[in-house]
Length: 390
Image 1 (spheres, one colour):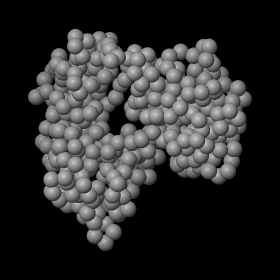
Image 2 (tube, one colour; image 1 turned 120 degrees about the vertical axis):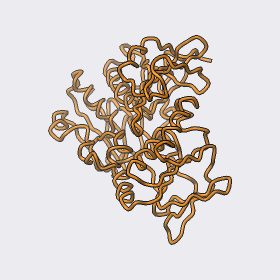
Image 3 (cartoon, one colour; image 1 turned 60 degrees about the vertical axis):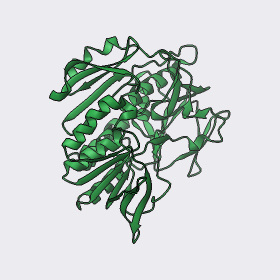
Image 4 (tube, helix red, strand yellow; image 1 turned 135 degrees about the vertical axis):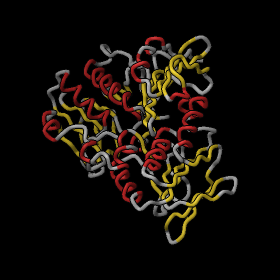
């Protein structure tokens, strides 16, 4: 191969570039990113960047000198608009056309918006560093904050803003925070954590409108008629894979870019990170993981398989790993945490704020979760078995 294009100036895209060079690729590398910033880390945005504890430049994943060592053509502030997988050409929004021998798609996610109130001042989503910095400026004014969505991102934002001493309400249609991610049993403990720290919870409620006056948000209307006053509203209702630019490419799309078990999308094209959807060899089911650790591991796999070619490619079969930091709790998990799993505490005690829980599907351990128990949790990793495919 003479030219490999990486679409997505992300953690996955940068890791793929590192891997390609380390595995001996000496040709031309081009990375395309729609932000003006070089690749940076996203997990701190909802935590230390919002608090001001981490300066924006500290989120950068590589210093300029390290990027230069990759001998990579960085095309920042421009967006890929089309790919022709037959002619092997990526077209950019500035009209540039990039011929490629290999292509890695790592475009990540775009946040979902509510169908109303998007244009009101004070309404935010949080995906980029610039969005985090804009939100932080408004938080410094001491507003009342409503966070809509109690998944990982929404729960972290609620914890962070409450830690700043603000009046915070967290809203979700589920019965507990993180119900979809970790189940309602552990979700109930997260709810207690937030309530103990002064977050007002409105669980099992939907949002029907955002209220405003003079072009600024003034509140949130719930489906039971409750009005929550707010000067800042953060919408964290999930994200969608950034695949719109591939709509007319002929590539297989669904919930992301549809790959095979080796992350291959089409001849010479692989995908990695939040945008990649592949049949997990351990479960037999299609999987798309929105986890920072997966972005790195999958990028390594995609880069290696691209260079190896179909004959030498190996399936990508990770045991998922993720984490979230909220107030004084560091929650980490390995494997799968389905909502219908039986959860058993096997070490420590939830009342003490330190424990390990196992998730069972029948008699199989399919997941392990540690609450302030990182070291103890490692001992349970090898007990995890993948869920049996339905």
